[in-house]
Image (cartoon, rainbow, N blue to C red):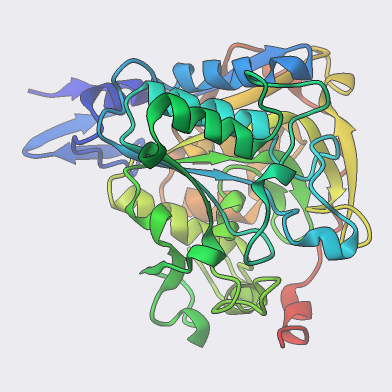
Length: 392
């Protein structure tokens, strides 16, 4: 007997089920063949004020089916984009109102929703640009609080009190210093034995990417998959501050049909491996205070420009994009910033690999044209050859 399943149905099957998701092609579980036939859905959740971030992020997780007992016994790895950690030396500390990094309220909300859904353990992990930091520095937007918590550390302390210490943790990945290897599409010596990634990511039943929407001087866009770069080690694949060796390893590699793949080849490899392992992962993209132009940081490191999204779209709202297919979320983000998928290397690679959600996706909860930012300033793309001279 053959049955059609939506992506939501996969989550309902249970965290321990066979979830082979090189989607939306043909998926096998035992002897049964399952076909998906509908476009991948990306949910848009609109809101008017940054004080609603926490509640809207919880709702976004619910839209993805993360509710009731859907994650019972599962391990979940949350990957925010906190690249500012380590940037204090350049006078770029974490500031939720600049648009360089994910809002801490979003991370706290999704963590709590995962625990409510029965997750056995939730790890909030980031690599950023240093080996350690004070999680209290990851403050909420001005005026925001969650039961008196005003930063990520105190929000997690609250969750430990509610759910027990051993069910949630904050992890600086470079300090933990535990890595595994996934297959690399580059034959460069730095990754010839495989691409090093954080063990917590490698072993998680589910990964939830929690980025902020930005443009980027090497990857064109930062969204769900570019966020994975922070999973690679700073020392083995860098110089202790940046991942220059990772850039070198992919700068001139031909990956999945794209020459000079650059850093995009690395995070496509990470995502592809998770899908081939049959993992069901998710993304919730922060589209509130973001960064346009030549990011991923502002001056003096890069030349990104803060953008208040609700002042730049026809809907006049902030929004979150939520999906159980990272490829579809990234494809929608590219459209909202004014790029066709053919202009974004990672989306071309994934299209070549047969991830049809690059083109076959639908947005629910809003009209794409209402959310689009027609005058989003694109990045000036830089060559990754610069990393060959600055990796000591």
